[in-house]
Image (cartoon, rainbow, N blue to C red; front, side, top):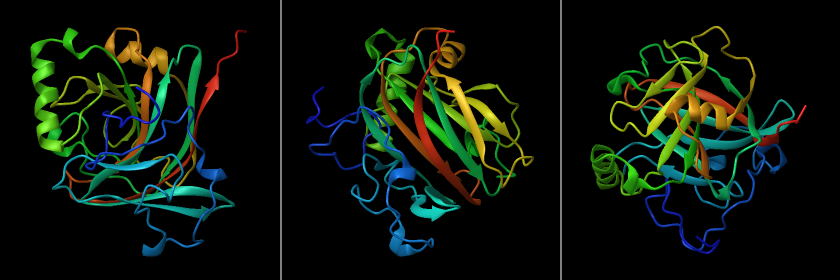
Length: 255
């Protein structure tokens, strides 16, 4: 895929024409906030509002979570406001070999989702998610998985990558638990924060993507082709707010 081709992985409901595939993740802290306050005027409503990040939704009929770039505690961050909604922001990446790299990020949950249980499809919501999409040969997968991909595209209008790995803030599930999506087995989540204990606090995580992918899937990862964020409450019909700080790749030391 060239930088001028439209990505087919976790794409927007409208094809992203002539999108620039990013070599890295652009930091929110280096972007200029358009408003010091969260307001309708500062809501991310077009692809130009946050450089390199694009809006994407799970399905046309679902209400969309609102995202704002705003100044908070001395830096620009993303504020997510979910009200019975589910959608996210995504960075289409140039295919990246993640061997030797960790993913580091900061986030803050302002409220938990009391009714959420990520092991159950009808209550699978989270105040914070980091979403990673990996390339691979879908034709090598069992027929059940291929049919699940076809059904997902029929419902959502866009393709899913060969494998998706999420880092989530869960309500009931334990730290380091691996959760397989109830509908598509090629979507898995690892719990990195849980419950209400750390609500209102900035949390920093640094993870080996390669090790976590092997832990979740039992195989080596393909190249990373997309990274996104998502705050969702469409299943529980709750309201929740959260904040995302910078997300970046960190090369591991050989020591």
